[in-house]
Amino acid sequence: MSEPKLKAPRGTFDVLGEQAAARTALEARARAILEGAGYERIETPAFEATELFQRGVGESTDIVRKEMFTFEDAAGRSLTLRPEGTAPVCRAYVEHGMHKRRQPVKLWYLSSFFRHERAQAGRYRQFWQVGAEALGSEDPAVDAESITLLATLLREMDVRDVRLRVSSLGGAEARSEYRERLQEHLRANEASLSDDVRSRIDVNPLRAFDSDHPGTVRVMEDAPRLLEHLSEEDAEHFAEVRALLDAANVPYEVDSTLVRGLDYYTRTVFEFTSDALGAQSGVGGGGRYDRLVEQLGGPATPGMGWAAGIERILLAGEVPEVGQPTSYAPLELFLALERTDGETRRRAFVLLQEARSAGLKAQMDLGGRSLKGQLGHASALGARYVAILGSDGATFRDMQGGGQEQIATDAVVHAVLRGLHDL
Ligand code: ATP
Ligand code: MG
Image 1 (cartoon, rainbow, N blue to C red):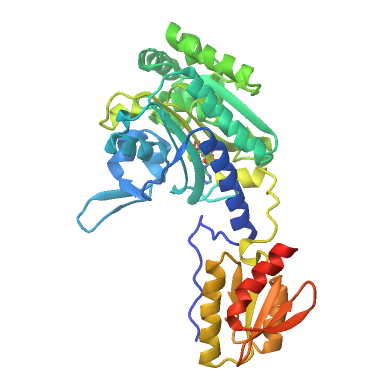
Image 2: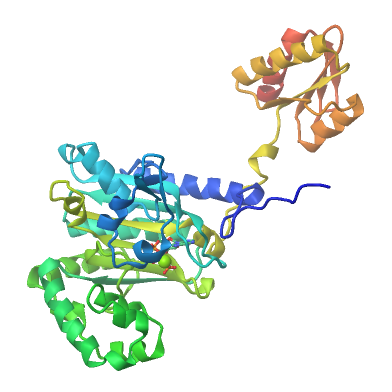
């Protein structure tokens, strides 16, 4: 009886072959764009204290209420697989005293995140995001630069039918006055709302804008809009962000119903969607979070950032021409063994290390193949040169030119280098 086959857990997947190559290409583009703009790479742990997300993302959000993978360690501490990247980056900013550096501190990441969601196309339980955060400046140019960088990445990845919506949630004061006004409106129409929205009137009334429940949608059509109740300063800030986007020729729509699923946003919020994605249309989004660092115990520090889903970029984008998966990248040297005795294998192994130290793409036979099999394998790998190690020296074969000669083992690396550079 054979054992039952094991599969990757629901909502997870293996990344291999063309997918792995496409991700490598995406990462290279993201790095070029973001590091070119002064963003430094950061990687935070895959799990954090649960409290970080409770305090950072907010108790009333879907993420904290029902999407976190939370567990206890042996000492009884509550830990959570990171569902998003902004709170961890802010935690790291405080922990490393980055407020003492030149501001803004710009950081980017490409990591996997975990949410316990209903798995479907474009929605997984482990997924990858590329994200960028700029901490320490309120300048509207930070907002515009941040949004423009994501627009550039999506354009370079040929993501189809992209739309950008922007809005402003204002500062804390306007927000709390507005919350009350919105709560009044929701209570006055309570009977038409979905259970979910009704149960969150007190804790998170803004989320009602995100509902697709028909009754709620009708109620929200004539709900008061935060955008119309911004303070003068917040309105000016938003106007400047828009002016900069206009100047940079980044097309967008102002959408006063845009609220994001995380509690920490203030002022600018934005979202890129792709109509090519169907129901899971969100490609990436973010905004300003001027209170978050303080909420996590750090000094008052404004922040602005975004995250975009790697799988959705690849689904809605043109998978870049990456040629063959890297494991099949054209080989420069293949070492074949005439005989598979230990002495010949060891000689080949030493030569393999020498070839790699000299910068060559080199492989040796690892499959215990016959000599004929090895030569077939070498041409399948696209090897430019093959050295067949015999009892005494090597037969050095040019797989493109067709010639071959008998040379000493320690002349092989040099022969390849000479051949490649004389071309
Ligand atoms: P959605 O509305 O699709 O649930 P979200 O508002 O929860 O998205 P964010 O928290 O803003 O998403 O995350 C930023 C991006 O990460 C999304 O725009 C999307 O591309 C991607 N993303 C979010 N959740 C998932 C998931 N479960 N699987 C794959 N990608 C995801
Ligand atoms: Mg979500």
